[in-house]
Length: 172
View (tube, rainbow, N blue to C red):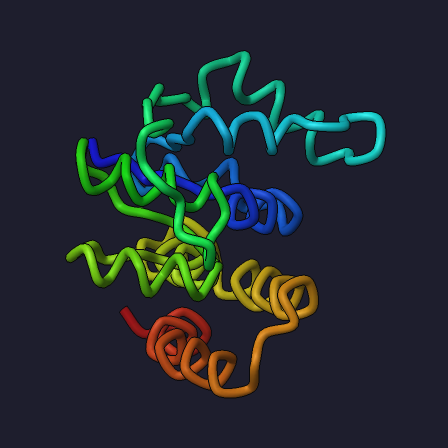
């Protein structure tokens, strides 16, 4: 089973669009660093998503991987949670899931292959974990939450098109 190592924002996005519960159906564990765990469950009285995520941590649906990086300097261009995510993937394996462009760049520079929340959504569609209708609705919500750029929207729609056509036209 592969580990998807999430930063805070990506896991919150997928929670907001109702897709976090389906991630494990891709055959992966949802893993977070200590900093990301703290950020996810902070201020549950203000953020309903924090309540959901805290329950998932308690149930073991989201697993924390301890990591000691106090001796490492976090690059100024990314947050501590993103840095821990990348360090975990580089040292222990796993796929970094981040929507933060500087973190994506750092992960790539370390030889990792990061994914974003829209790529996870596309994987759910490709694996028939969600229907074309669920994909379209969730992707629209994600576009609104993330304020995705037109070129990203166009690219994801192009990549989704074969899976949307096959399902909606009745082709197998």
